Image (tube, rainbow, N blue to C red; front, side, top):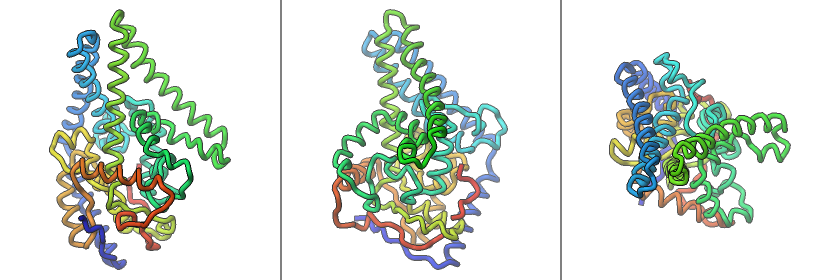
Length: 376
């Protein structure tokens, strides 16, 4: 049984904690160079070659081995594109290269979610207001109740079904996330703003669906259905994997939620503590970390969102040591263990109430929100 308790730090300790993480971030950024540029270019090449190989094999997809291999390769390409390439580039991790292909403000990725919407809903809202109930819309994605601090209604009784549906069509859920239709319906967001954001999604979704479900299947001629089904399957594989990694980085046993009061006078050190307490890591090998977009190091990603993700593994050793020295819980575990915790949370909080466990704590300090230098 894990011990999730963290020692309460006084203001001086919080400042010292933040200063150590600031220093680690600065040392890492100062050390960036050709090896990091070469790494992301290799990832880009891997996306292209696996995509080309997958689509080529699907043209012979009437043969089951070719269909399976083509679908698998295309799924790998989409996973790499979304998680290790697109997500990290859009965070500005490679803006220092001054390469237009890796510029965060103009990069577009292979998913129906427009990068502009992702920069707002993810880079800004989620990373600045991490796990603050009522401010971070990623807490349940407006669909799921995952913490006891979220108000319950009868619709949550079906949330295991909602979660499975969301996992299958995850890219569509993320695409609509920034449209904020719930706010439009409540009158908290204007119809004009909602229509503008929905228009961006529809344009991007139109391009993506035409590519995967019309153009490439049509090019296959008599093998139209084989290519179409392979593209559908590859997108589902990507969606399930992204859901798995993202949920295991945010909704495991040891993570905490926070009230809006923490935003009052929040210092950099307080912000770092909130990121540490609101995130969880996954343990695995090098290939697993790459395929997860290094979001297996979700703690380090939340602490240092603008640092190239290929540096997180080495940074994690020092972050874990710093956390231990300050008596702070560092949530990490194998994929199966972490996903089991997520599934339990989905089922447990579909019910109206229940005794709060130590894994369902909400941070109650009036702590402190000044977001550090890069939240988007």
